[in-house]
Amino acid sequence: MKRVLMFTLLFAKRLLKKPTFLVILLLMPVLTVALKYLIAQDSDIIKAAVYDCSGNEKIEQVTDKLISDGGAISYYRVDSLEQLKVDVLTNNAECGFVFDENLYQALIDENAENAIPLYKSTKSTMEDIAKEEVFVALYHTYAPDLLKKYMDDSGFYDDRTADEKAAMEKFMDEDFLVYCDDGGAFNIVYNDDFTGKVVEEDIQKMADDRDYLLRPVMGTVALFVMMAALAGAIFKNIDEKQGVYATMGYRRRPFINMLVIFIPTFMAAILGVACKYVTGIGGNFFKEVASMAVYCVLLTGFAYIITAITRSAVLICSMLPMFTIVSLLGCNMFVNIVSKVHGMKTIRFFLPPNYYLEQNRTVGGMFITLGLGAALMIIGVFIDRRKMR
Image 1: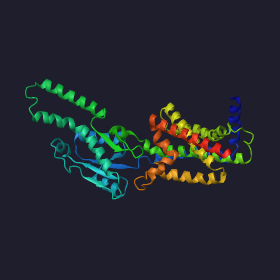
Image 2: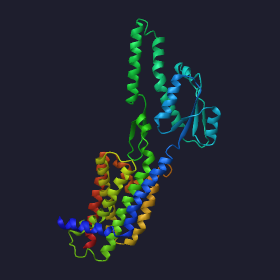
Image 3: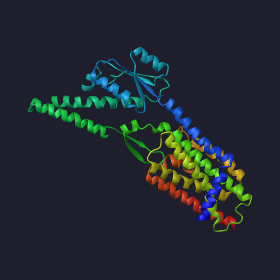
Image 4: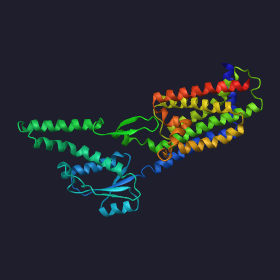
C-alpha cells in the first residue's frame, strides 16, 4: 500500500510538469467561468411582453406573477400596444400578450376563446410555451372565482347563511392555493430520450428549474475530465514505449496501467467538482462527489480499454479531438440534435460525457455508470494480459 501511495504521488508530481496536462487543467476553470458569465449575461434572452390595459385587479396580479416568477420565459410589462408591436417586430420579444378590460369576465363566463390577442415574431419558436405559462397563471387566479360562480348558479348556497358561505369560500380559496402549490393543478408529461421512459413533472418545478441554462458548463466539465483520462492513456503508452514499466510483474501490470490513467482523471475530477460550485451549479455535495466518482471509474475503464487495444500514443492522440468533437456535438450540452440526426441516439451510448450528463442524475443511473466502468476495466485487463503473453 505504501509503494502504491508513493507511486501515485510521484506520478501526480510528474504529471503536473507536463505542459499538455497543465493546459487541460487550467483551461477547465477558465472556460467554465467564462461560460457562466456569458450565460448570466444572456439568461433572459427568451422574452415575452405583456400589455395590461384591463384595469382589473386580478389580471394585474396575473401580470405581476408572470413578471416575478421567472420561469422558462422572462416576461416584462409594456405601457402601450405600439411598444409591444415594436418589441415583437424588432425581436426584442418572442411574442406579446394583450390583456384587455373584458378578459377576466370572459374567463369567468367561460367565453374566452380568442380573448387574448397574441403578437408573435416570425422567428418565434417559444410562443406555445409562453401561452401555456400564461394560461397557468390565469387559471390559478380565476379558477376559484369560477368555482364560486358555479356554486352560486347551482343553488349550493341557498340553505346557507352569509357567514357560512363566506367561511366556505375562504376555505376553498386556501385549499385551492395549497392544491396548486403542491403541483395538483398542472403536470408536464414527456418522453425521456435517454431512458425511453415517460416522465411526469410538476409544472412549477419545471418552470423554476433554470439549470438547463448552465448545461454547457456541466458539459464542459465532463469533456475536460474525459480529455484528462485520454491524456493519461497517451502518457501511459509513451512511458511504456520508453520502458518505464518494464520491471513490473505480469500480475501487477494491468492494475498499474489503470492507476496511471485514473490519477490524471481523478485530478481533473477534483477540479471539475470545484468548478461546478464556483459557477453556482453544484448541488448536494455527496451526490456531486458520487456522480463524479463513478464517472471517473467509467472514464478509467473507457481509456484503459483503448490502451489495451492499441499501444500507439499517436493513434490515441488522434482519437482525443475526435471524441471531444463528437461528444460536444452529440451529447445534449449546447443543443439536442437527436431529433434531427436519428443515429445520434445510438452513438450517445458510446460517449462517456453523456452518462455524466444524463445517467448520473439518479442513484440507479450512477450504479449503471459504475457497472459499465467496471465491465470495461475487466475487459481491458483480459485484453491487456493476452497482449503481454
